[in-house]
Length: 112
Length: 117
Image 1 (cartoon, rainbow over the protein chains, first blue to last red):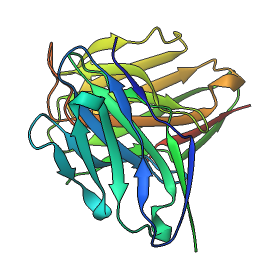
Image 2: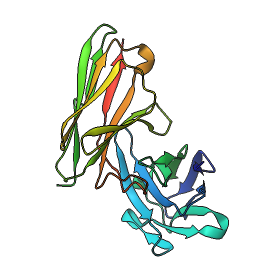
Image 3: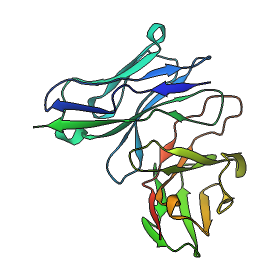
């Protein structure tokens, strides 16, 4: 069965510091992988997605993620955090169904 | 137009009430989804409509009744809900409904915050 593990339910960084949010997946077939962001009392917004093309994927708001098959990982990074990046981040995997399998989420806090 | 809209934004209802949530998209997407999200949790899939037909029901109680009147509109009819049904209800759509293939990017609406008293 496909699954997603997000290590760290909470991550805190200082403004201007590197953001690293971890996501590991389990999939028996080549997956599609997604990162979504959710701001308080809002829906989910797509940050970026991997669909078996380039392994380094660039998304919105300066975020990027690298697909590493050998490590079954799809970690999200941003070189310099901004206060507006504070939100909940979800990694998700899809495979041979209509379903997205979500990780449990990581709450990012950014301190001035 | 790359937006999924949901109405109402907030809904308070008693356990004997009947209400409906509405979701609309004009992106030509042929797959539409209902999710339930509790606080500090990921969204949980409830229903999937593929080409206006119900394709997935994740064993949701019958007090939730989905309806897809046309390719742009998705409703969720609520009746005799319980307080534990209070949550954020999210609608999403995706460009193609896949059978045996990867689901494409899902675009989410802002949600309806439901409180059941």
